Amino acid sequence: MSKQVGDRVPLSRDRVLRAAAAIADARGVGALTMRSLADGLGVKPMSLYHHVANKDEILDGIVDLVFSRIELPTPGGDWRHEMRRRARSARDVLRRHPWAIGLLESRAAPGPATLRHHDATIGTLRRAGFPVDLTAHAFALLDSYVYGFAVQEAALPFQGGPDTAADVTAEIMRHLRPEEYPHLVEMATEHVLRPGYDFGDEFEFGLDVILDALARRLPDDGPAT
Amino acid sequence: MSKQVGDRVPLSRDRVLRAAAAIADARGVGALTMRSLADGLGVKPMSLYHHVANKDEILDGIVDLVFSRIELPTPGGDWRHEMRRRARSARDVLRRHPWAIGLLESRAAPGPATLRHHDATIGTLRRAGFPVDLTAHAFALLDSYVYGFAVQEAALPFQGGPDTAADVTAEIMRHLRPEEYPHLVEMATEHVLRPGYDFGDEFEFGLDVILDALARRLPDDGPAT
DNA sequence: ACCTGAACACCGTTCAAGT
DNA sequence: ACCTGAACACCGTTCAAGT
Image 1: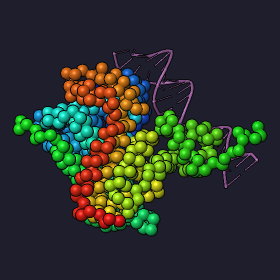
Image 2: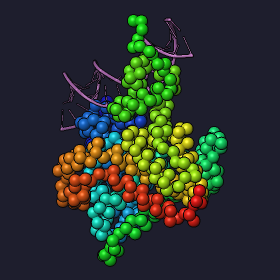
Image 3: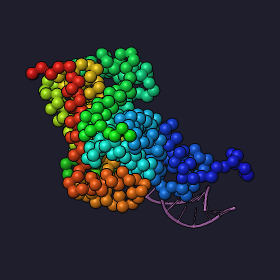
Image 4: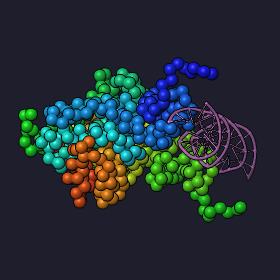
């Protein structure tokens, strides 16, 4: 009745958001309810409302929390290196929190970490000599690629590495009639199901394509710092 | 008590899915409930369960319905033309049904329209002379770009054309301190807020970049049909 | 200041019944 | 065969109270 589970860390907006993201990671965003969240924090559901306005603010908050975990590019650094590092980090983070990409669609207001991330990205390109309009093009192209790749990875009918991937893909393919989907079946049997294939490896191909194309469109080489 | 609202079209899986997509279009996927869906069809919620197993099957179904509305590329046609037409159509359809991209993440099992779409895309590239591995690269790259662009368009803090876009963006920018987000503010004031700017126009730039890069990597020109 | 019990208007889904 | 009323175990959120 007195002393609870030891030292009770007081609730805070930050603790609420971290716990919310942890539930989404472990059991999916569908399992994230005010009640499950309160349970996880050892508190009653109504206590949460003292730290966040409502569930929508929690969803906004955990999306921004995910963005805060993506490595920021450094304005002034080599733009190719910085853009590659940022893109890899973003893909990595989004793979660990696949629910974030699905939430993006319904959240209109970007949080501070998201804005900081965009600012650093734009700044890195501008400082490397990209004109404003090419920066806008590059920004849209790079982010589209990273987000879209994350969507595809999240939609893959398996999680956890190439080995289980092949098993599950093989199982699905068994139900596809080759007369109906000839090219899909060919791609699966002759390529995707080969040992060693990992969809994740496709990421570097597209990233190279995009960075090469941007380099070719950059007026002249950036300053040698 | 007798005759209802006239000729009662009998319920069917197809009618259920179309009505579900219409509700998601009009009021967002959050407003799509078994009860609101039944209401829209002039029926009681429990009747739906005679045509779909549960709500999850409805969500799977409307994602596949959206895919069925994307123009299929034609294997044997000029691959650049076919890929461009398909990409534009996909972006168009996803803009009209922005909730679809958010659902993709949680739906593991692709429906028949989705499989048919993938099959036609792969087939068009293969028939144009793309080796299997380059086809896999191209497929992942093109789809990532299209999906990711759709994510960004859906996350824009406005809907409906460049004019209202500028207004809302200006309103948001007013709250951003230039000392905190200097590059973001510069990009907004010197580019995005200029009359005539439309984020949607960025689509063609990235699409050209990708198609050019793929053409450069294609072993030799495809057969002259 | 921070937490909470009880209550309200919702959810998806099951089950047993109606025609 | 197709539809449904009542019920169950859930939701997010409000309100009035507790410490």
